[in-house]
Image (tube, rainbow, N blue to C red):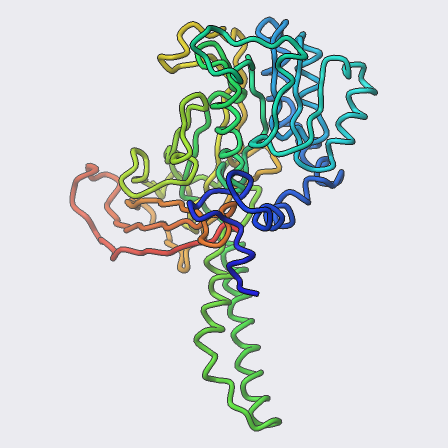
Length: 421
């Protein structure tokens, strides 16, 4: 059977839950969804108190917006967001869950006395239908699509560095099919991706040490195989080196960085308005996009003894009023909420760290500039995973010099492609 039979991606580069074969959907379930059917995985997310507090504040702090409304929770898991929506006064809540976690969600609704409000629907949000006639659901005006009966969509869809897992595709399909276009709300409403140079030298050196160790073991293996079994395996050395380099040096690392690891003001690399973003937006960050280029100045005297070890990426999510023209008449959120996954307080998302192959030392009295660009595209064989292409060049000047003043050194450009595993 060909490897392509198990590719976790459609011909259009989208996730298999929409417009794909049963085989592709089964592969996607095995590779992605099945872990979400385990309570231990749900517990990990529920124990993330910064995550929980942000959603709780957004929903319960805006109970006036939820009162008597129709709510959809996309990817409800064990159902806590749906339960909060019911407690906040929603008339109906539709909790959509693809996996058998839906059975646990129903138990949670029963145990918390909201089963009469929350309907748990098991299935992919791309495939399900709402009981529009049975529950007397209505659109906001005659011009709306017949399925656009939902006032609020809530979802915790975000992955590492925001886009990993590509659940945003499902959310966009749900929004376009079910949300009232003029008055509907998205929770969260806006998301922002950030990048910053960081000091993480101990971990960077550890990865380099592991890579060197792996290559040392390969050398021993080649010598042993030739002397003991008479076969020379050295011809595979280049391929083995590439594999180990991709694994140890060119794969991003999950990290829980301290706040002082940031060496410059973080740069915005992508913004998404959840009411207007498109499937094209969800596919990544591309050369020439509005925020794809970055520029950092790292002042050595502000970070004594530090080294630039690489970049870290993370995201923020906001729960606030609509800012798009089409939503001018939507209800306003009087108590906005904010979720930050950057260095500092723990969240289960952590940060994704892209270590340099060689670090950049900071020299007293000097400022190091990093100018470059970030691209983030889906893996060819798995639409839920991403690769990041980072290009940058460094230069140094005296900190007393103007930004465009005399340079002490200008380095050559560096380009690396990192996998986000």
